[in-house]
Every structure is written in structure tokens, then in C-alpha cells.
Length: 273
Image 1 (cartoon, rainbow, N blue to C red):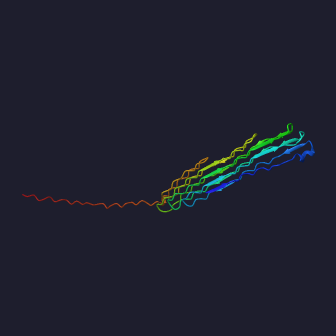
Image 2: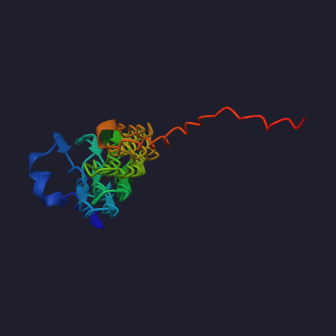
Image 3: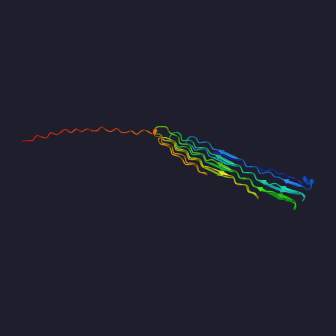
């Protein structure tokens, strides 16, 4: 099976300022613009296509969680005349998960049933939270704080794999293969990061089930298969088509010859006198 996992987003950078770095300027404005949390890594998993009559490979993908933007700020030794502006902070976005399972193998030779499609699962990474943590501020210092916004949850995309096709059988009086069942698909979107002012949006999950395979054409055609579960479920395949030209012609038994019965007239016995 194919398995993939995205890495976690990196932490935002930090900045330290001591009072003597800005005290010479006297009253003024100090702008604090923290970094955004790193995004989670994308995960892309693929399953192999199944060999003849065999099931396709499964695929599992998990997007990486984003990093939070948690900013601990200590404000010491700054004059009350100093105006401090803190920009909005954002948690990182969760990583995307993509899972592509393998299709089922076709039914080979005649009469062999096709393989089922592989199963797929994907989970988007969680968005990062965001929060200022302000301590030791001098009372009266002019501090303007902007928004704290959580990152978006990662999307999850899974396509259920299709079932294999039953083989068309060209042999006289042959039987076509049955179609393979479509693979199931499951996806879970990543949750948005939590923050005081705005929680991030949950990601989007898409996970249609795989289509069922068609039956093979033959004198005795193969049957269709159902689709895999998902949202929506996969489509049902089509039954194979009957091919009368591949069917043996019925033998008509010969009629026995008719019996001909010839009756000869019977001579009556002589009458005695």
C-alpha cells in the first residue's frame, strides 16, 4: 500500500529588543510584527494497480499539522510615551492530504472475476493556533493589539479506485469475467486553528467512491459490480453483453423414418359343405 505523511510546520521566528536599543529615540512608535506559523507538509500517497484478478493497492495520506503562532512578549523598561503596535498574528495552515489507491486488475482469462479497487483514506492537517502572551507591561503604555487568527485546516482529497473489468471472452460457448467492486474512500478534513478573535476554517474533504467494473461480453456474459462507498458512492458497472454468434448452435435431432404398414387382404377360410 501507499502511505504518506506530511511534516509539521516550523515555528515562527522571534525578536528580542532591549530597552537601550530604543531609549535614545525617546517617545515614538514601536511596531511588532511577529512571524506566521509554518504550514503543514502535503502528503500524497498512491497505491499500485492490481495485477490480473487481484485487488488494487490501498493508499493512506495524512497532511502535516501546522505550527501555532504563540508570541510571548515581555515589555520592560519602555517609557510610557512609547506607543507599541502589535500586528495581527496568524497560525499556519494545515497540510493537504491526497490519496490515490490503485485500480483492481482485470479478469484474465475467460471466466475469471476482476479484482476490487483499493481503499483510500486521507486526513488533512490541523491548522495552527495564534495568541499573544503579554506580560510585564508598564501601566499606561500605549499598546495597540490587532487580531489573533487561527490557521485553516488542511484539505483531504481521496478518489476511490475503480474495480477491474471482466474480460470479454471470444471462445465458443465461453463465459465472460465478472466486474470488480469499486474501492471505498474516506476523507477527514483538518480542523482550523483556535484563536481568541478568529478560529480558522475547517478544510474541505472530497471522497467519491470508486466505480464498479463491467462484466465481460461472451456467450455467457459476466455480471456487473457495485461501486465503493464514499460521498457520493461509486457508480454500478454494466453487465456484459450476450454474444449469440459465440454460442453453439443447437443440434436438431434427426427424425426416425416413418414405418409403412401395408395390410394385405385376408382370404376367408373355405366353407365346408
